[in-house]
Image 1 (spheres, one colour):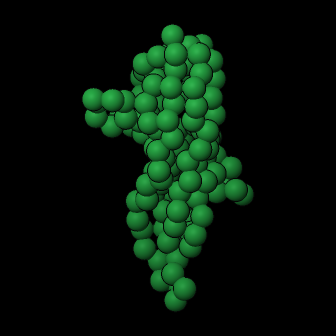
Image 2: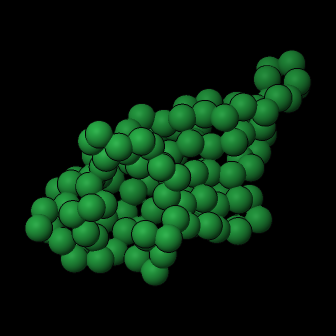
Image 3: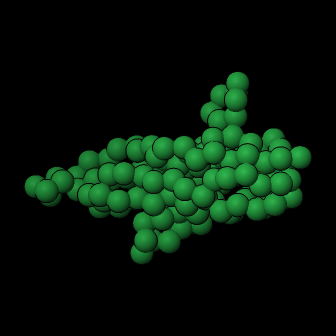
Length: 123
């Protein structure tokens, strides 16, 4: 299973970006997807989460500005980021709790990480 994160870039404060996290591989089900971020010199923090039931949670600092959503048909989760602030500058990572189905039809759960995508918000 691979997770491909994309959509980062440079944007001015107040602008918007949409990050995508596309999952591929031997996926039986995607149970939840998380977006994390890590700013320079700071620990990684969980920014938003969506479950397979569509339940979403957000860290307080992004509530009302960020929206996480999913497209089950495309195995893709999006993070729409509006009203961006310089303090949102970070490398953003997606991660997913996946039930993997092997070629022999065995299933197991695993937590996968995608590569990071850099978001830079200028003041």
